[in-house]
Length: 269
Image 1 (spheres, rainbow, N blue to C red):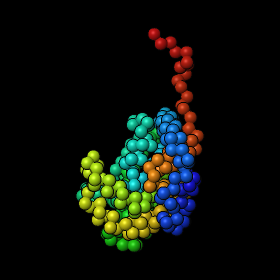
Image 2 (tube, rainbow, N blue to C red):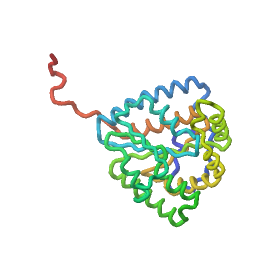
Image 3 (cartoon, helix red, strand yellow):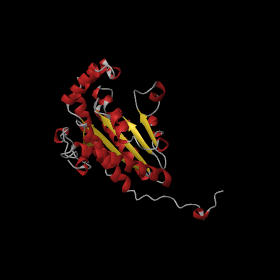
Image 4 (cartoon, rainbow, N blue to C red):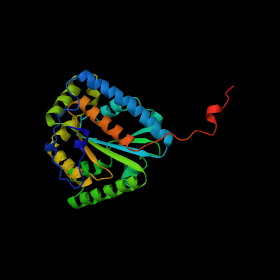
């Protein structure tokens, strides 16, 4: 699969079975070469992020959503390991607090969006409010449809005020999730990640798949597209996302700001 083929066109009825979670075409025949390409991508991302920060005009919002164990944290660590933390902010959204529940569901999200020159990464996001809530029956179908519309309006507003939005659904198979949960259970260094409630959520796999398909169908737009990223293979996942990030940042046609007058001839004693 090519990076361009991961994008969900607007008004597409999504069936996740149409995407192969095992797709590794981007790696090619030589894994060592693929790892070198990822290193090159990281270096290029570092340069582009510095340019984004220096120019101070554009804002980039990255949304990561996935089933448990698909690798949201790992993606952030491995794709963004070389960027300057001054220009990147990561926000993780857990269960809302009572204070947050007293406000609209987008309130806690809005003040985490990136400012000019920043990359903002949402590790889970406002989409939890049409996923968990739908699967557990906390909102009905009519409210779910209202929230899709509100999310589209929210993201349109961000786009129209200078934010470039990329949304990545990390697509793993149920069998791959089983293997990763077993590894967490059996590896003493990963047991801290294993929680009994993970199994309760796994039992709702089909319901979450249906909820994701509905959300992806309703909210992939020209101004805030979803990309379905094959994520059974971690190297393929990271290469795909780094490629799409580089393409997006290069498309902004950024330039370093002009230096102060006569800076080249300034005498430094």
